[in-house]
Length: 375
Image 1 (cartoon, rainbow, N blue to C red):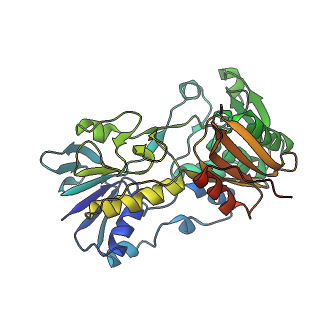
Image 2: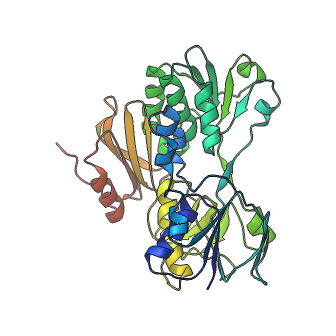
């Protein structure tokens, strides 16, 4: 049975790896639009962007691994059409037939029209080339404007400040990350960036005058799942490719994972689409098992992390800004554990600079029970 994977990012590469590690011996084709072997994207806004780690450290495997494990890695190849009845994928390098197909097409940055209409250079962050461009633009005396106070925007701001740039961040909400963390914890990140010299402008509409004189404008206003291939192939799409609890699309021979997958989460009882490193890995593994004949549900709770200046955090679960938050520790010292409760149950938890807390916050989300505060 031939398995074709569209998208040579972390999710697609993990699926190919898991197929081989679980003993699947059939043909595996991995198609990637970029010219690089599969790599992880978090370093692009973290250690690689800061200049702390080389690009090779972000690779999922050394380039030679794919041939050594009989994975047909085809780089610089874009999928342009899908016929699910004939099981044929049209690509920039010709047609590819499959028996099972995995879509790991990811997402692309949302374009900021206002910035595109100015004479100021505009950058987005998705590829290693994007990260290189940002790092080259940073430096003492450089003025960097970041539009969007989400995870990517704040991580870019931290890297730019660490390189000595003057940084302004525009966020339309009252606080950065407020829709994810709620006002109590989001305030921690606002204070953190202001203490490090970021000109943080909240509740602010950006105008062309705000961008004038910048050396670079970085647009961090979210991403859009790449669903064109799925849509054209007749798959059900709605804010991503709709998949069931087993990551199967509306066509049984086709699965989807990672940023593009809008997943019917069996434990949460609702659909979620998660754009994080951990989900790409874990969904890639479950999809590999099911592509090879397994019947596993994807039940893992979302997990993500960030590093900004001297603050590191991990978050588990799926909360909203409206959920009640209980904090153990000190927000002022930025060493704490936070728990989000809905109807009395813990639905998400995070720690900041409390590296002994990883197991505890995961256990709280698994059990739904708020732990007692440590003395």
